[in-house]
Image (cartoon, rainbow, N blue to C red; front, side, top):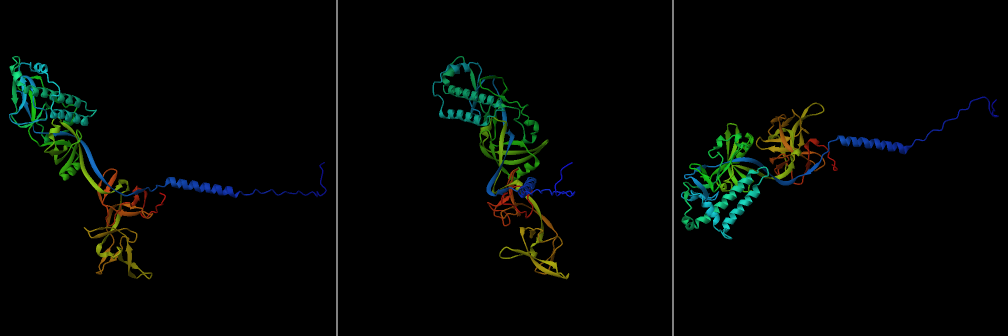
Length: 469
């Protein structure tokens, strides 16, 4: 039997369990953690407003095109069979009766030239400059994807060297004419023009005949005419560009073509040598599409050996306030007739509007409005719906009435200088894919150094913008 205490009366004594103390710090920590998680989740789910500071700037648009050069070209046929030796340099202007080349009927002229000692420093400053210009133009216009240009350059230099040698020969004609093994004849120009020693079959191509197949350079064939080559009677020997006026033609879409046409004259940069020239614009509606034609009255001599040219059009250079395109928004407003809006000396705008008293009677009350734009063409103010609603009745000074109903849309940005989104109307002068140039110092618009929302889709009207954003 178990031992009982002296005070054991047979009753069961229940001992009260010791209560655990509540840890206040732990509860606070959990609460702060939960709050932080909620704030972070809301932050991540919220679209944030990024500020952009308006600055002064400009935008120039430039577009590069591959164009076909069109000239008034005439191929000249050889009247005498024999070895042709060019005297006139490619790109040189010749007049009627000027010596262009000579024909070596015996075939011994080249051997005679090589046997003659040209000596040292036989090239004049002008001749050296011609070589230097050719080399510089080639370097500036060289394209790794167009290796044919290397051969064209090689042939051009070869013809230049041959021409210089033949010119040296002409200066010593007494020795050449006395050589019994030589027999050659002079050939003179029958027209005035620039000399070119190549042909490609496009000499008679008219601007309105150009099609997309003309730009397929894989099928394009250009034949170089080389000095000291045997040529038969009536074979192509050289060609003349008869007119100073020439043009380039390239395909465009209809909208861009009309935009060019409005310009009348366009500044063109030739990528081959970075020269610039103004071209007169005309539009061609050919069988397979629209083409732009730019006509020049100068600079042809630099490109007399080219059919295809890379050109850059410099169309606009607008200056003003530079803003991102992403900041531009559209907003709808009520159009309020100017006769029902009063402006005081402090540029405050008010309207007299019909309202209802508590007893249901009608009365007129004055309300201050914020005006976003005034269109002088229609004599109306653009006002938002903060105060006005569709159907409100306004009173004029002559007791006439105006019902708020008609709406109009403005293009603008959200100014956030004051910490909230305030719509400001803008006038766009020019824009590209990334930026727009807007008119500065307008009555209801932007000022330089204003802050605007970088992305207009991230803000709503009068939304509070935290300074930390």
